[in-house]
Image 1 (spheres, rainbow, N blue to C red):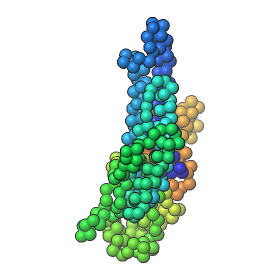
Image 2 (image 1 turned 180 degrees about the horizontal axis):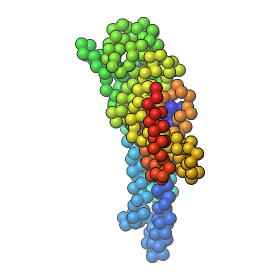
Image 3 (image 1 turned 90 degrees about the horizontal axis):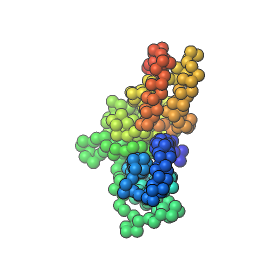
Image 4 (image 1 turned 45 degrees about the vertical axis):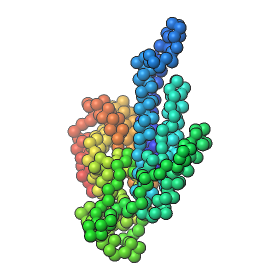
Length: 355
């Protein structure tokens, strides 16, 4: 919950709040047309001749349910599937909330979220098999306890999305080792294994560690702890547009020594996002005594939306992402044209350039 909630669920819940708000604006129009239809002796719920508000309402809910049913969540060090177990249940909870809301207004939907939306990479074959069972158990338990009929034939589909392989080093061709590709996903979560620099050779062997260091030499220092390679891969996925948000657990050790390089790279990647400079400029605008109270109120709202409670989580949880935040930031910037000054952007630039 500590990781899945802020990294995966909070952005999705913000999307749902937005969708629901749009639906609420349509409800009075739908009720008005239903009353008119009732007076004329027609059914207000006639879907064959749905009014524009009714069609728009149905479309908003259907599209969001479809969105939830196509969310892909990757745990690249999934172990026995604990994080993915939590993820599928929370996704189903949110989907049920949407379905229940729609049912109150005559929109019939069934749960569409499936375990096969969850992706995993695990090097231990026993843990990989166990993760598949754990995820299915979580799904079937949720269906049973929430009054839905789980699938019966077969009860468990094969989960080819949970892969048994090394997440950071591909030695399938020992003569030509390479960096493995991670599948594209909306979110990355996980608790990668931690091995300090001095323990890696003893636990993993000289050949493995030497090959790993060589493969990532231009991106990570040779003294980096093992978990840093997962952080670097997650950062790369976001930079390449193959993931929108990532959150990984680590010990406090990631903050010091050679490990800190990966944090610096994550910061640099975050600074490349098109609206980060605007966010920091808004912060300096908020501190400016010349900024009006109404503008400050807008900034506080936007910054709280952008930051979210993920930033008050202990600093051994690292997350990077954006997606729907950009819309709120862009809208606020338009409102603050006269308040955001060159000096605010200069301070933001200086802040981003600091070590």
